[in-house]
Image (tube, rainbow, N blue to C red; front, side, top):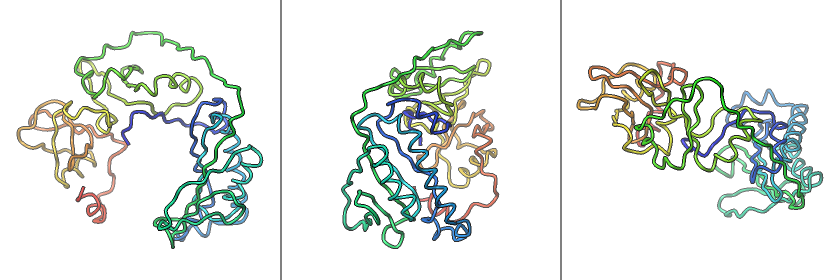
Length: 320
């Protein structure tokens, strides 16, 4: 969503749980039997079984057990499912309280929201039934970890420097891309530049050493020869300075052509060079404007592949 204060990892919960007392809040939207989706996807009812409910309930407990150590004492666990049965919902909340010493916390809700309370036990829990609340079926509970544990483990980051060529010099123009550039620190991976904001800076080396990082901070772009090519992440980042690049606003049809990675002509008078493409003020990505044509830099793997654009999508997006 463009927020630079994010690190995305791909790890088993057990590996995350080794980061003792690191997180203030853990959100566990655990795999479930999906009963809350039955109205939306009637075919999914054929996949339901008691055995699958039991499997999902056990899997949810395993995930909580694995990540519990990574939650700070006094920290919050937000547990949720999109199912109705008490085995995956209230029973698991009761298990977390009894086995892990957690405290279920009440959440202030308005009566007009028509949220339903627990169906079993007296622990605060919140059920969203689609015939009463907007949306599909959902279950939610918030638990606080007891503030009695004192052990705190921190892995020492080795901060290994990559051998070989020195990192490229950051071009002066690139330094002006971000609204608050001094609060970011650079990281080069080959010729690709990422910038990490201050809140990420302390924990990133630790996570990089022990987890598989998929994305962190903002990918600014890549050096190719004498050129620096801005990345799609930069176009969508909330940290991008509004005046960092020339802007071209497209109509609906040209915006769809851009998202299909097709060739397009920019409005007359558009500056040459890297141009930020927008639709109704919202950034979509970059092109390199050569004057008589524009090279579409939208990522190949993200492009719209179908020739059919539903009218419903047009109706939803046009008023933006």
